[in-house]
Amino acid sequence: MNQAAVSLKRRPRSQAQSLSYGSVVDLFCGAGGLSHGFKLEGFDVVAGVDIDEKCRFPFETNNDAPFLPLDVASIDPKELNDRFVPGVPRILVGCAPCQPFSKYSQGREDGRWQLLEHFSRLICEIKPDIVSMENVPRLQKFKDASVFHAFVRALRNNDYFVDWTVAYCPDFGIPQSRSRLVLLASRYGPPGVPTPTHTTERYVTVRQTIGSLKPLTAGEADADDPLHRCSALSSTNVTRMKASKPGGSWRDWDGDLVTDCHRKESGQGYSSVYGRMEWDQPAPTMTTQFFGFGNGRFGHPEQDRAISLREGVDTDVPPDYAFVPEGQRIEMKSVGRLIGNAVPVDLGRAIARRIKDHLEECSK
Ligand SMILES: C[S@@+](CC[C@H](N)C(=O)[O-])C[C@H]1O[C@@H](n2cnc3c(N)ncnc32)[C@H](O)[C@@H]1O
Image (cartoon, protein in one colour):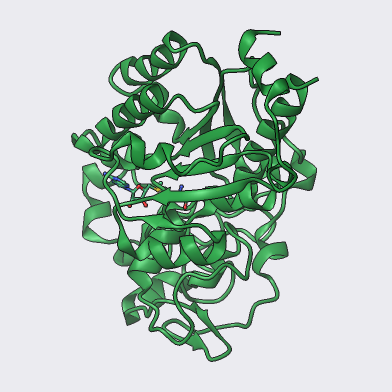
């Protein structure tokens, strides 16, 4: 056992502190999906940092922790350090914006990738006991893999043990075919990675997740559930919707329905848009614009409309997760962004469980 693990064992704990496995500060906290996973697994979430003020309500309401409206690029490490609870492991987690690394950036330079370097800088300055970093798998290849390698190297140079994996969400009981790079680092010993809980035959499907929700027509909202509302469709898009198939795309349509951009050579590659979700499969990855039929395979499996915010929420976070204060008008765009950005809560739980097991292994 290394020296750090010994100090974990000897660390005195008060009775109140022993209720928590560790205190968690969440960088780029968004609406708090990742934090919520830690909270449900018994960790003490002590702060979330994000520049988007719209995150304040969902983060604070669902996680009982303060929201700090700060820029990770300029935050004072002391501000974060002071938040950790003394006497329990200090855990710094973060999911920096994924867009700079994702295939949707289409080669355009998005300077936000440097936020990962700020994450790394804060780790080196704060020296938390455990780190969790989550992002899109393509981060590993970005700029010839140099950015990811620099992140790992900085951790190792600061005496962390580092492990990572690509987690496929359906393997963790999440009804969404999202794949995420999950990296864990620990000062106590090799932290390992979350282990899948579901085999292919047990994947949670769209039918199991949204099959019993009230039917809607395009543009309608359910009076009993403010989040069960969907975008309106033009008459041409209603015709396109009717011609769309589960798991299909615009290629299923008659030629006269095809949009000008898909007729062009440059549009031929976009084969996974304007399709419907499939009842007996997990849903596609929820992007920040999942409520638009043309933005992916986000058509309802059989109703002629795009999926509602509720249908997106139910693949991601618990149904009682609050996004806006009761009675407040729902803005599709901003709530859709919070949902699409959120780490699925069950993935957060799987990460938190691995950290819990690791801490227990190290204190034996
Ligand atoms: C992928 S999302 C994080 C999702 C979050 N972990 C969750 O589970 O809900 C990335 C977040 O980074 C935030 N962000 C972008 N630039 C930032 C900056 N300079 N400082 C702090 N937060 C930033 C965005 O507002 C967004 O909420």
